[in-house]
Image (cartoon, rainbow, N blue to C red; front, side, top):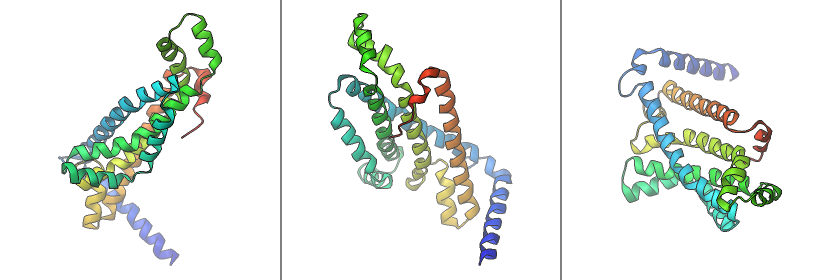
Length: 235
C-alpha cells in the first residue's frame, strides 16, 4: 500500500517536471507567462479596490470611534460568506465575466483590511493623540501624522493577509470562463491531467510567496524600526 502511494507521488512529481519543461507551456495565449500575468492583474485590481474601500473606512471609524462596531460586524459577516457562493450569485445576476470575480474577491479581501486598519488606529496610545493636540494639530493632522504611521504595521498586515487570500482564491476565476492560473487547475481536472493541476497549484503557491516577500520588503521600507513589532495581532 505504501509502495503504491510512493509510486503515485513519484509519478506525479515527474509529471509536473515534464509539464513545466514543455516549450508549449511557455508560449501562446494559454502559456504560463500569460496566465501568470492574468492572475496578477485580477488579484491586483481586487486588492486595490478592497484597499480603496476598507482603508479609508477603517481610518475614519478608528479615528472617530463612531460606526466601528457596525463596520467590524459587517466585515465579519462578509468574511463568513463562501467565495464560490458569492461568485455564483453574482454570475446569475450579471452573467459570466470579470465583474463577478471582482465582487467575490473584494468581498473576501475587505474584512482583514478593514479590521486591521480599525484596530491599528484604535490601538494608538491616547497619550500620543493628546500630545499632538497639545501641539496644535487638528483632527485630520493627528490621524495622518500620528495615528496612521503608528497603525501602519497592522494595516500592512491586513493588506498582506488579504493579498494572499486573493491570490489563492483568484483561481475561482477559471470557473466562470476567465483566465488566470486557475485555468490550469480547472482544465487539468477536466482532462484528468494531474500534472497540469499540480503545476497550476505550484504556480499559485509561488505567487503567494512572492506577495509575502513584497510586503515584507514594503514593511521594512515604510515602517519605522521601533514600530515593526506592532504587527502581531492577525485578525
